[in-house]
Length: 222
Image 1: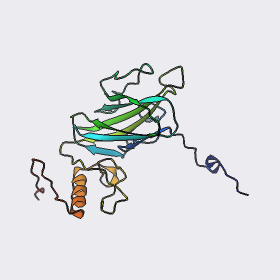
Image 2 (image 1 turned 90 degrees about the vertical axis):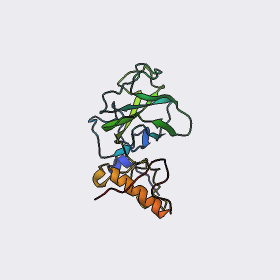
Image 3 (image 1 turned 180 degrees about the vertical axis):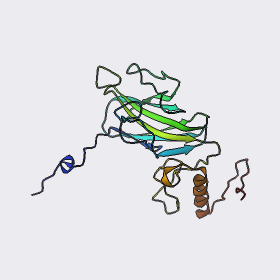
């Protein structure tokens, strides 16, 4: 006779996530506490590098269904610009909000294109929140919002590359941040690593290393 044992009885905690940010890579899985989900609110090595003003794809999933909407915000220096909606259905209530009133549709998977601000920053943060409607009265902070953040670096000259598919044998450079970016060893973002990954990919596929874009590129001297 087979008996199923709950995983937390074996020492593994139960999964509590209701949403999860997939792209760009999330800071961490915690999501209960503002502004980014965890108590300590510290950046991690899960950093993603993009160019200022780049349009990126933000993808997340809802693992437990709640009637809700989603909001995406951006802070170019940490997280102090993030503001919770004062009311359950208050939209675009802060300058940091890039996209709001994103409909919670059936299916559990979400993906939207977002244009990042045209600024350079080494300590910038992208925030995705879920504002839920089924837990009245609405209180903040409380149990009505889930939070996820991605640690970003926006750097002029960063090479945007399409997401690397770890299942594609033609993608020789595999990174755990399938988000149009890459990290150097130790999780430190590097434009040089981004460029090298792009060159290896194009060379393996027989593509020109530097496609015609109206600008010229040359290898660094020395």
